[in-house]
Image 1: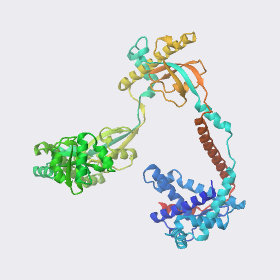
Image 2: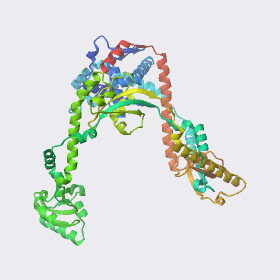
Image 3: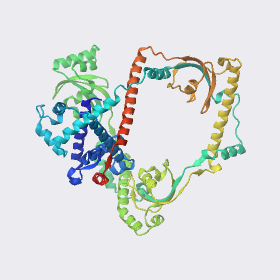
Image 4: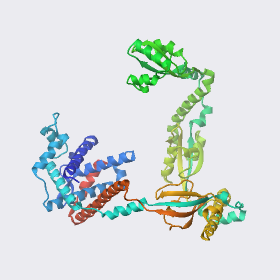
Length: 614
């Protein structure tokens, strides 16, 4: 870590804080003139504004990472404010330690850094004192405070550099890792499936299924549910009761005439040439086959995207309309004089005219208008239904007083049938409590609903009769797996007695130079891991799902650490490990410095910052 980078990082922090302050409306004066610091570390203050900016910056970073706006209250739930304060305390403890050791930089270094900061430069690229003073004043800092922060940052960087200087792992560490990762295996295997069994697995009787169910009830659990009674009303429920005026249907059809009645269109490319002669020469060359349209476009310094007009009507082409619409698909025609100059056209496709009569479109239009009308009818009832609920009406009474339909649901995460398919319902189902009063909520399609939590049911085994199909499938899967394992064990015994895997009468596959991280399709997932734990010449079985592999290890191939790629990997690995090791040492050192520091936190000041962030 260089001295210059530390100073720049500190400056970036200050300037980012200015931006946050200007956008967030949080000013130093809002905290009151008597509260300047949230605490001290060995006498070094942690400014209120520093803490505020740091928290707001973390909120911004977190919001960007999650893709949604994170509030300060949400961030508090997982301790963001404590993390920020802890980091600032550690930083100030290091600043104090650097001062105690007498580490510092001279005025000349501070001056050079200030002159190089773009934010403090004028239009001519030179240092602008007015810009410097204005920027610091906007942040509530004076020049002395800012320059002192630069000095402290540089001194702390010197301290950190001294702590981590010379940290380096021995070369054998990287070689050991590379040797481990670079090893490969050669092996032969046979993957056994149900088709390899000498006879099919017999179907289970009722007693076998019952016994399996009794021994494995945890496999057939019904999920825990939230038991909800709800009333709902959607536009689809009242479509049959909504009247749609014929005149309105006709008017909507007329408004969409362009959609239902489209003239013939063509997919066209247009290339404007420099002269009529050049355009004619291009047409002749394309017709003769000595030049392509693409090459002609490229010769003009253009791409096909530049000359693509998309789908066009005859009228939109003006003077070129008759020529283009008189040609066949795939033809290049012209030249045609246009407002841009002589042009040639290529026709890439023909979109036939489309005409949909009012009679054909009527049902679709009527349904759309009915849906709109139904949504308005529902919307007009919301206040009245809310009043009923506020007056003490139950969910069940809504069915008699309104058009809403009442039902119950044992809701759990993953349920998506019926009303559970609506995100709005699921959001309410998660958070509703038994003490909540029902209220009208909106659905995305214009519907409404209200819910009541009646209770919660813990997860429990499904009755045998309901789970029977799942029980049979699970029993059969285990039976097939057991039969395959028995067959594989028999093959291993034969191989131990001297039989070759190839003589077992099963399909055999050979794999070479397989690394630890390689993926082999259609084999048990743990096969490669198992192979790397085997001794040379060893035989093992690997079960996975509905297959069992018999595998024999043929060769253990050591990593080649002399090849060029190994040198590159060694360098990358060494750099990463050294950086990680240095960071761990620095973290341990910083933690110890912090533990020995005199830390005083003004909780009232911290609370004042929090109140302005909420």
